[in-house]
Amino acid sequence: MTADQWLRGEVADGVATLTIDRPGKRNAMSTAMWRRLPVLLDGFAADPSVRVVVLTGAGGDFSAGADIGELAEIGRRGDPHPSTVAEEALAGFPKPTIAAIEGFCVGGGCQLALACDLRFAVAGARFGITPARLGIVYPLSATRRLVRQIGASSAKYLLYSAELISAPHALRIGLLDEVVEDGTALRERVAAFAATLASRSLLTQRATKEIVTALSAGDDADTLALRWMREAGGPSGDMHEGIAAFHERRPPSFTWTTPRPS
Image (cartoon, rainbow, N blue to C red; front, top):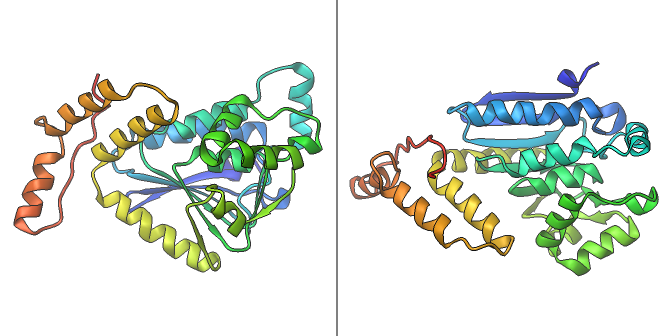
């Protein structure tokens, strides 16, 4: 099988689903799969019918991380790992992203999950970041994102120990947003939530994503927020439709799909 088969994308009803499908290796990501991910995301970003992306794994696991054999080869060459490029592409994707997690979410799997906006998991899922078992250093971008998400102490707990933690533990430290009972409940909940997001204003979501990212990084977001406010109230913005729909007691039909304001 090839990376095209191990990592595939499908679109239905405004939701693009990215499925990691390499169950024989617990959905470990090969180098070709890491490189394919940004390509798929570029296509979804350019497709106006796509409003939300869901990243999930087939066969009962999310992802056991990077393929260790290939990781060792890249380490010997001293090249940056393509997981970092894939992670940044996912984190910078301009529409809402959700990780739907079953089974193992370890190493590079956590790296991908944390690059998504939101993370939903089953109660039996297991999470870990395991460079301390291999004597390697976790990528800086992934470490920074981990610290911002769960704090320095919890990040050290995971990185020092390389231990796997439960979904309730992950929820408690802020690694997860929701935990559901089983795979069926996960698929139903994620589908319903993705449909809700697809019905909302993409302009609001895009603005929120950029502003929250800036605030999380400690950057000045004032100018960014003002630009987005002007865009929302402009002739191609969503505000007029949202207010009209509210007064007319009907669902809004948001149409904004243009790039971010400059």
